[in-house]
Length: 130
Image (cartoon, rainbow, N blue to C red; front, top):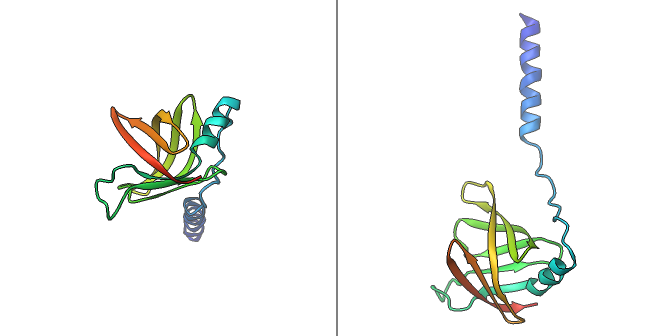
């Protein structure tokens, strides 16, 4: 009986240790030269061109190291990003604290404006800083 208790304790301890494991670091996927140029052009801080709510405009930051952050983007906290084949991929944490990958088509990119599309909906952002 004592052996069963010890065995149960060991199994429970291992389960707790594995479930509490720290999240693995993000490694941005390899980008070819063209994708790297596109990534460089979208780095920086972006905010809604015409905010729905002027007091709380949606905005996000794409850092050079592949990290991302967001403000006022409901149900998604941006964490990481990369570019591949004219798509902007953003890893975000959703309302249930699960990682989600957003895939946004880069319709247009200039020094000051970016137009993204997801599920037939276009989103226009202006650059705050580069």
